[in-house]
Amino acid sequence: MKKATTLLAAAALLSSTALVHAETLRWARSGDALTLDPHAQNEGPTHTVRHQMYEPLIIRDVTGAFEAALATEWAPKADDPNVWVFKLREGVKFHGGEDFTAEDVVFSFERAKQPNSDMKELINSITEVRAVDDFTVEIVTDGPNPILPNNLTNLFIMDKGWSEANNTVNVQDFEGGEITYATTNANGTGAYVLQSREPDVKTVMTRNEDYWGRDQFPLAISEIVYTPIQNNATRVAALLSGEVNFLQDMPVQDITRVNGTGGKMVKQAAQNRVIFFGMNQGAADLEGDNIDGANPLADVRVRKAMAMAINRDAIQQVVMRGQSQPAGMISPPFVNGWTAEMDGESGTDIDGAKALMAEAGYGDGFSIRLDCPNDRYINDEPICQAAVGMLGQIGITVNLEAIPKAQHFPKITDGKTDFYMLGWGVPTYDSEYIFNFLVHGRESDIGTWNGTGFDNDDLDAKIKSLASNTDLDARNADIAAIWRVVQDEQLYIPIHHQVLNWAMEEGLGIDVDPNDQPKVKHFSMN
Image (tube, rainbow, N blue to C red; front, side, top):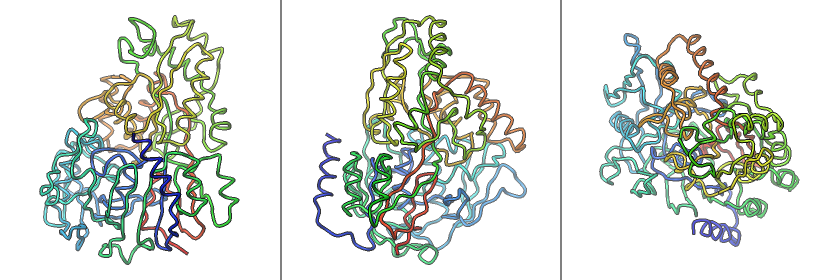
């Protein structure tokens, strides 16, 4: 029903005869925000929509440098290395007219640490957040945390009073299907105010005329109409017809066509994101395979064979039309800890893969289900389809199930998939973020996206120590050691680093953000 609704909305968009207003940004991409609750889902498109309405203490600009948002200054406390001091911006109001103060920051951080929060891994080193006065906050960590600010760029601040009045003190239980007032309503301090929200259909925002940054940013856009359009052809048709003037998730096969159309253009940049497959090595037996009483993925030789069967160059050239960079590790090149040597470790070797399969006792292969999203990453389902054929060359029969991301992601976080696609961006630009979510054993406040079942107590201790290690050379050595284990154990099958292509009308001033998070307050119109 959801897919049908989305297609109907797209059809309605295309049939509209209204001309695009000069100050209206008609923005489309393949999928919608999963929720507006600021702390319920740590997912790129979800953050992107919320960034227009909510704000964190600090953000990053398109170069990756920090930019002041609701905090104007931040630094470790001079007499206590376990404390960071944040000076807050004065005179800021929420969209409902409420004053922004330190009380809202304390409330938001405490909320983000709740069990249902998908942001808790980012702040699990924080032991206390306290208001010194209305515009000063101290954040106490469990030992010195030299990179704490890196973890805060998607940690949005809510108004405490609004949350209490609307029964949204608790984070939405997204995986449990809960709907709360914060799911479809917003009251932030951001440059745009929510006017209407129809999930998977349309979200409308208008310029916040009382925004604190009114004189600092172009704020050329007076209205945002955000429309998810899952179908590639329909999405491109909307751009070419003029019904959409800004398009993310540009289909790679249409780049030349759009660039050759008068008044349209495509801007490109490498993305801070890697695409990969996860494998459940932790279960004693898999539900989705045809092997009784054993788990073939528990054998590292099988995992390595599967990685060797994937032809990343073919995916790059045929599926992605050159718009990707083959990957050998699940870290983008932007990230501290990435190395060219490790990123070049994955290669295709069908004969070698078959030999490993036979050595592991699976020379005749096995069957397994691959879970894949069809509305999240660039050509996600076609990539999975290509992998099906590649794995078939070594005797693995893959049954593909491609579904919308809203249904796909809970399979991973709830441990209900054995073989799955996932993409990972790293807004902190540090490997600790990857390790906390994807490598550490699954616990209540860490490892929540680790669907592999991998759990190593010694490695977990080393991962946790990264948050408080102020000796950066020693810290980087630990990061390298952790990566060596990830690589040797073949926890994941890296596929490629994504390349971003944003399509737009000429005259729309946009710099492509490597994090794929356009912030409309920066846009200009000529």
